[in-house]
Length: 318
Image (cartoon, rainbow, N blue to C red):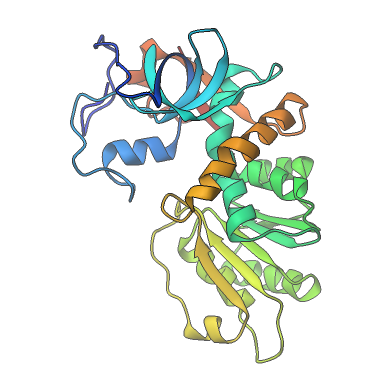
């Protein structure tokens, strides 16, 4: 349970009750703790409800059991970080055997942060050259694997953690551009890549100054250019950038974002009926992998802000 401005506490509270025929009571098994959850609960995420009350249960989604024992991933009506919760029966997905609870809890948010941008905002096609800015994080690692799954011709990755960048090669990355090098070296490296293999798609989890440098590298000189679809998904490096008007005029640039409010109802429907089932199937076949760090619900107060290794997701086992 969460009080604004404080850490969550482990306590008893009344069991939630379904309020209509679209809600179902479930037994919760695992819940991933994401930046999105923390942002909404603290009020810093743009989708946070200003009227959120203290004393609420946190967690927006998770792995749970229906009354007949069926294991599903579901999105919460009530808070999910509890032994019992209510979920939307129209937004749940069966979890296949071969996918453990921690993986099933952690994977969907990353799929949302990767697949929705690649498919619906970037319109990824076979052979596309994809740049993933900030690929060493949990969602970025999934984005690398999905870009390859969607038959990208080349996947370029940026990031700050040297060891994590090298791990991305094992996940399918074709070229690494470290962010920790000086700005001149970074832009020279990226411009060389773009000249040799023009970048078609940018999936950006950082924004901030790195986005300014990337956009500068993509700026044209008046010649014909390929269409570039630049998709902002996160803003870990800052919410604001300076954007030259020449960037918009000198290249065939589509600048958009992928997040709550940017997708259609039909696209959200496809997420639950097609995309997530497909991703769970890939995970069951070990064709889509993630790393998790698991903790117990009773320890949530001390572990809410746990600093876990780069590229992993914290999952609470209930």
